[in-house]
Length: 617
Image (tube, rainbow, N blue to C red; front, side, top):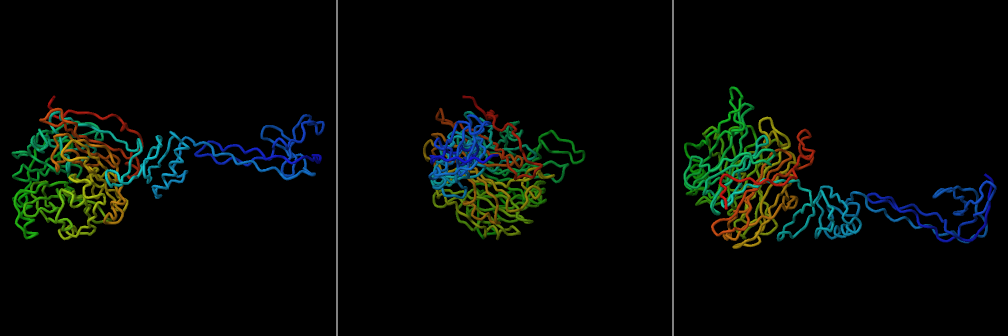
């Protein structure tokens, strides 16, 4: 190429570089060349081969324009030219791509609400209604940002429902569906302590009543199939071989001895004069141990005795002996039976909570062992949780720490003098002394938060056991610090003595250290929905609404059960119904072979099913 030397005036500032490309978000554009109009040298022929070409100079070189944004250096710029033109401005960021993420705008899941507020405000200005992937995380904010396209995550806010710190789910984050069991003029309530599932079939107890008193129409169960989405059949008006108004606040399922024996259903039932431990074969899985064929006939309820006495009578004598007191009557409530996780669970061994014995009303845990599922059990011990004087309806949950059994649970409050509490023991060899020395963690959300609500809990299984199914046992729980505890309860009532509402909460937390240390700081507490109570629910301490519980249908499918109301249309009844909500979890918690990684229709509308007790308007 021949040398070309041209001289000209100083050029103006170069044109800006091109904007960045669309992305998430685009990078800044490249710096511009100094090809301002004053830098144009000539549009006439510099030689015979390039008639009409346009030439520019920049950075001491001469450029020929070959095409749009294409240049060739053809010579050197010399002469009295003045200063070089200013560099072109960087291109602007490109507009956000299809999906934006908070971290790209400076938000942090460990950041302060104030700093995240700024980041999300900038994000809202940039993306508008565009899709935002919250990455399954919880983002602390002072208020929910104006991001209608946010999905797959939570907004962590404080002072919700009073002083609670909760995670508000973005739309579509929780994959849920409900079956609603209607009672019409009959009030359906109190599923607490009763739901359990075995091999994908859930059994949920409830009490039907003409008003708010539980048990006036005895005890019923609904059997749910299709991952909790189908009310397949009912067992209604069960008197359990007793008389009077039957109350059941605790039921569980015992795993079978082996593959040829089916599991058993256990109920802790009272008619006001006697408290019994009852058991029966589950008809769906009751099998002939000789031939292994399914037995289709319903098995009858049978009563287990404890040293020849009923469960209630043996509890009194055991408490009397353990605490040198004289008790009378029956516990106000016996609830939340939890199967002992070792193979002894096959024999019917269960932990259970109780309170309200006259003469010793404290919150306690009892342990039934021996072979109660075959009719003959013992009460190995009873223990006052943490030596607490106050607290009611204690829940209990077996869990595993390494190779040892542990227990934990919650205690609800009865008034405003103390908060709800979490308790746990992290010592091998569970007995009365260890129950009395349980670690207690008070809820920091105020003494009036979750008042009158039972707080039931269960460990999440990781796999289906050969014998246990999805029940939390040694087969299904790993015993490491990532094991998850899930719980459910209602929050602060908006009013007592009149119509109002209360939030239903679902909580979950990894075990962490042995005592579930700092559970209230670490737990994710998620508002699920508002529950309403009618005008006739004027008893300040009544909690017909809510009384929730939960169980695992499989490692990915959680079943929440609770009651709700609509305003009464007449003075003689409340329109109260039972709701069974399944939550499908799409994560990597379960073993790979047991994960659900596809959409199985969980977003369908709720089904409404009439209970046998249904009475038309």
